Length: 186
Length: 186
Image (cartoon, rainbow over all chains, first blue to last red; front, side):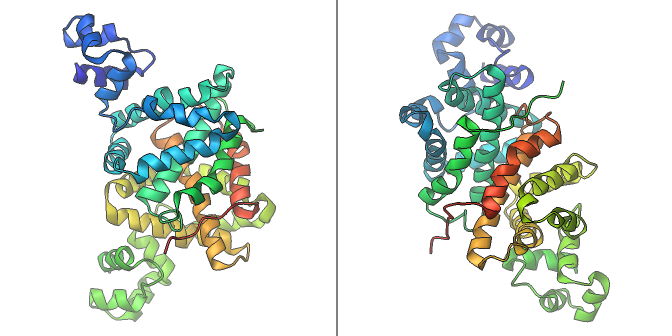
């Protein structure tokens, strides 16, 4: 079931994949997939062996309201990555960069499990939410890369709260500020 | 000579590596290294098989003055990555993420060949230049990762100038704006 799910999510993306299609591909009854994994979100997280379920920590990020969203998003990112999940996170990033399929799965994780939930609280038109979310991703992924992978100083050793103060305003602008938003080229 | 240079740059970093030390490690005369590579910068670029020499395109980035530096830095990044150098760039990023040594070399490349030259024009105290440069790196590396590796839409397909408009102000703030700068933890 998990192998079938991985293939489906990587090939078609999170949105276009149904529990029914995964069940058919795995040759089992959809009820069995529901029984083992509950929701499509949980099936996806199990399939990509996600080190953490964003649903568990995002409510705290969202609770302080839209005007604190920028700093709270980086703060949570750093709490997860400065903690015991770092090795699993690094393994996922390494795999995503080296492998087209894992890259797609990491992108689907970012978009469907993290960005959409964060942006969902702002009640924006879909295209605007997507563009703001992608800009947020560009800064968050960059913080992970420079602090944990490339280890560029002083970002590599600075206390988390100093990064929150420096990068939070960027994220806040991308989330709720005045930005010339990029659009897909058709 | 190139293997000895790679080892030295990865182990000790760009600054602490001399042409003399590379020559000694390779068992040749320093004059020979000078003859083949000219400067330490060129030796480094040859050692890491850099797809491009930043010295060739940075003057154009710097020419328009400090107040346009943010947009011009992203514009140049996108011109390089949207052009024929993308495969070599992707190969370098893939290798850096999977391999601690290549990660160090890519960091030394970013810091010594790109950020230091860009920040050098702003005439800042060393620690401030380092911190602003690292923040710039966090956004630039994030753009590369989201647009070219993870391919998060709309960043993956948006016209370059739309990205310049969205991300340029972030870089300008990191370069010359009001930022709570992070510092190394001792």
